[in-house]
Amino acid sequence: MKRFSALRILLFTVLAFLLDMKLSIGGFRPALVSFMAYWFGYSRSSGKGMLYGAAVGAVEDSLYAGVLGPGMLAKGVIGFFASFLSRGFFRWTPLLGFFGALTLTLAGGFVELAVLSVFSRGAEGFSTGGFLTLIFQALLNGVLGIFLRPEIRTSES
Image (tube, rainbow, N blue to C red):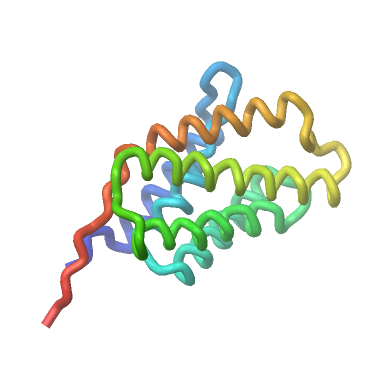
């Protein structure tokens, strides 16, 4: 039996979207959807992480952005690269969880801001407000990344 069923993943994704829309900490909106893309890519393969990230990015673009695509690209990048942290030569520590979530949230945010500043009028772009929001979101996701623990994968007979 898998640890997280499709229903639980859907429930956590909807909860992340609701908290992103309603929650404001010091005037900054958290990026919990980016963290969900990080978690999904971290706990699964790169293809599944990229697909999940692109799917939640498309939903996020349809809810928030005027143009479809920046969120898909950013969340897909996060889901893709997060999968490489859970396998390979990295040994999981809380510090790796922090820096992985922080770095990939920053990278996804920069991708999203760059695409929005090129293709959309009225986007914040790389202004001070957009940069501070991105730093806050990355720090919050980094703190959440400390508590993300990899599953111990065993081979089933």
